Length: 140
Image (cartoon, rainbow, N blue to C red; front, side, top):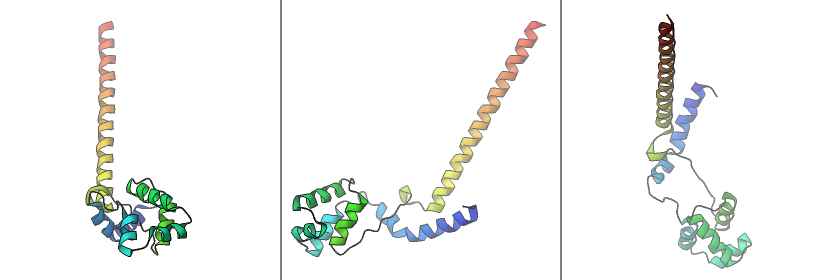
């Protein structure tokens, strides 16, 4: 992907992910959603378990694994669908940054790292040159 295309996609992602960036500012924005949605829709556990094709205890286990962030997307989708919902997720930069801002930070870190590597390489070359000169001078 060319840089121009990357910039366009980053801007599009920044717009699309804006609600997710806001949600991500909360400490645990999606913790316990399955249980919460089930309760606010007043859908009995047995009804959802039946639609998913599992026992009630398994559904409770899925809700627990969702709170622990260990549920699979497949299971999350199955339970959401059984409640008449769908899963929509986002990936956003930490700390409320936009993708454009994060890309700028990453680029700056690369520049600093490359500059430090170049300086270290130059210092090593200077040191080797100095050692050679000292070695040559002591032989004369």
